[in-house]
Length: 566
Image (cartoon, rainbow, N blue to C red; front, side):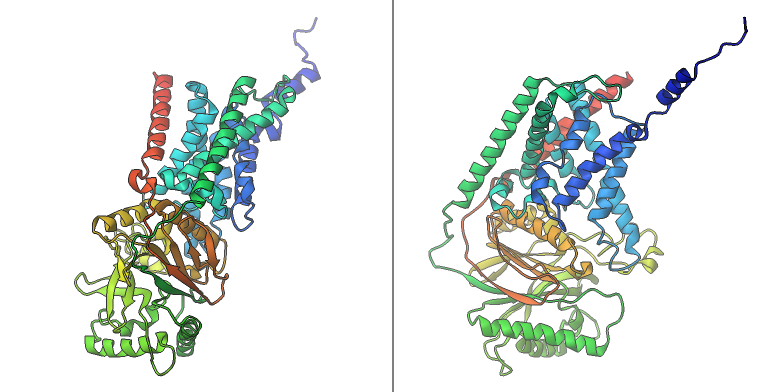
């Protein structure tokens, strides 16, 4: 008898197969996560299939409810799936300048961390603490969304709720605890949809398989999830109908109102010196659109230009340069203001001009992104310094510690941030300006509105002045508009948007887009603002509910981690 044992080839093949599972099994977590991220991408602009927002999380929910995650290092696979999503969503970041490629990669990689983090937290609640998915997943996802909207400078763009920004009936719940409310609803309904799919394919899902991951949920739990999801969705619709049909009361009986013209320009941001011919052509086009608005609407009380529209005329602001005297600036500014806002070259009936530009504060000797009013006497007043700056767009992280960074940045050392909100009062109507991406961060807008209310200057309308010429008509314009819609519902105040290259808009206090400017087209919008008494629960309670959700989820995860290590 031979001293050596012969192993059958079939056994060798089986061992090899067991040691090296099929490719699709090794990367199943990535494939399922990528499917979820792909559906979510399709729900957002530029594709904008908003109904997919209710189904996008279903593959991710299946991963959360599975007993184990397939493949090696599944959380790295989820990070990679998230990275592809955020790179595709933020594809517009590096368009203006090559130096912004670093910002694009950095921001996308940072945002991708939240994908495996959300799955890990949710799995801990579902499997370790046996909390039903219909509760655990909405709590975790909403809490994580709140965290990334607040952490560091905050990134509150591309929230799950924003997929529905063009559906007024559904977004009304945002006045309860912000846009996070609708995110919670969508997550909860997605769990119900997933449970429905499981019940429909229950036989197939329960067949024994060496490569399947059996969900540890009974039919009863699935039916309960479906019932809760249906009731929540119905309640959201009922609430939305009630709010849309609500009788809006005016703040006073004196019929105060403000007729505003929003002037949309179409000037792309270019990082090169412009020629004198280009300068005068740009100036001429602004004035022509403004005068056309005056001729079309004879009752205008205010004209608004976008952010940075006045940056080319710094010689008209006495504090823009120490070499320019106040008298010289005032004379030049008055002449320019009359030319820009009058009905005719005879300078009849000029109106105030609210515009924006980079200005120098002589007391602090530092530059700010500003919104300022040139009143009907040609004088500058009611100046607002932008509070919330855009990373890589208006400041570069660590440039103060490492000055060499400024040499490679298209914005140099950047600008400084203001600290206070401002209320502009015209015709007994108060306006609160916000600049550029400030309107993407809900707690900033809430803080400003409440601060002004405490000073007896509560705004009757918000107005976002933005220069979106950085993005050359890409989907960033739509994502920004979605944020502006939710700020209107959260504050229950009209939100006007005056945007260079679009999308300018008139949004009412229910988040309805009454008028919208074209994409990369010059244009003008007339809005009539009348003060009302509307308010919201979100103004009172703020982010308390999503913050509590995150605290609960994090505390349970930490307890789970501690118990496993002890």
